[in-house]
Length: 199
Image (tube, one colour):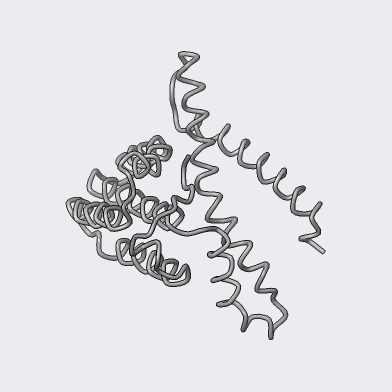
């Protein structure tokens, strides 16, 4: 299953959740700033693959992190190629692919509870200005979890259209994906409200 914690004792599994979150944010920023030509995507992907090896993540599990978002990345690549050029298209879609891969690696090697605890501790100073650290942590974790949910929704739309022999277009992918995401968000909001999270 996409972005599901995989127990293990690798170096990445043993790293504190807060450290991993900071590192992945720094890595995504570094990739965004350093990928200036299309071929720069290759070493970035190689580094991401090396991190998966360090985390002792099975190739199948690694593939599951990127496979659901490939249709979206291909759509972005084509769109960027149309409005800009091929070099820009490869750079943008490649950087997004690396970001998805490393974010998935954090999810694979970190329990959600550990992420919540780490963000809650880091957000404690916000309590002085009336912001609840628990809510900050919840929003961040929900955001992280939203990525695989959107990817799964996109994959389901793609597979459903393919099974019916229907054609593909950006509009045909985006509209049902967004509607499905809004429905999921609505259900999640109701579930959180039922548990008193909005009190």
